[in-house]
Amino acid sequence: MGKGCISATKYFLFLFNLLFFIFGALIMGFGLWILLDNQSFIAVLQDSSTELKVGSYIVVGVGGFTMLMGFLGCLGAIYEIRCLLGLYFTLLLLILLAQVVTAVLIFLQRDQLRHTTADIVKKLVENYQGQNKTAEHAWDYIQRNMHCCGWINPEDWQSNPVINSSLMLYPCSCQNNSVTGENTTDGSFCKAQSSDWPVYDSGCMTHVESWLFTNYGVILGICLGVAVIELLAMILSMGLCKSVHQEDYTKVPKY
View (cartoon, rainbow, N blue to C red):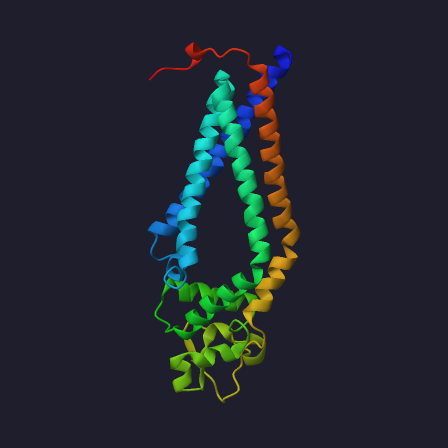
């Protein structure tokens, strides 16, 4: 490999790893926000799902690991240190394999994930008290903007003790404005004129699944794009590693 190719490979690899470092910092910051912000929607759901709590720590760990990998890649590329380039290649390979395994597990466990999500949402609906909690506001936002009510159907709300005590009450965020002719109020519960609630007929599960299906191509494209970038970085690191015949550690800055 000529000197021009080596220089181009080195700086392209440095750019890739700088992006990895920034991306890892964003992931780690998001994970810390989930853990430290007790008012966030995901933090509230952590009380009902051990998987979400563990997932928050995994997000922080993945962010920190990505930052470390980006740092090692930048250092190895700029100063042409073969051991760091080899370590970077190994870490990137492990990440790529972990992504493939995660995608396979999500595909195989999709029914279990759907069941777990349904249990979490149904528990949220059952414990809904209209006490200005972040989780309740988030669920109101979903129902109001997706034009849905409950997870499966509006009958999910009949398990709520407040509504069960008076079937004339219904969640305001479920109100179908085309039926009532009024804008949805900000109150937690509204009073119906009869036992026939003026709410949306469909549950939110179908709307969420429809959104995922509609954006499936975008999600898949992002995942494939990340995989291609990782493969390209692995090729560049291996090519640069083979072109380095003798390491000069005197170029590494001392602190």
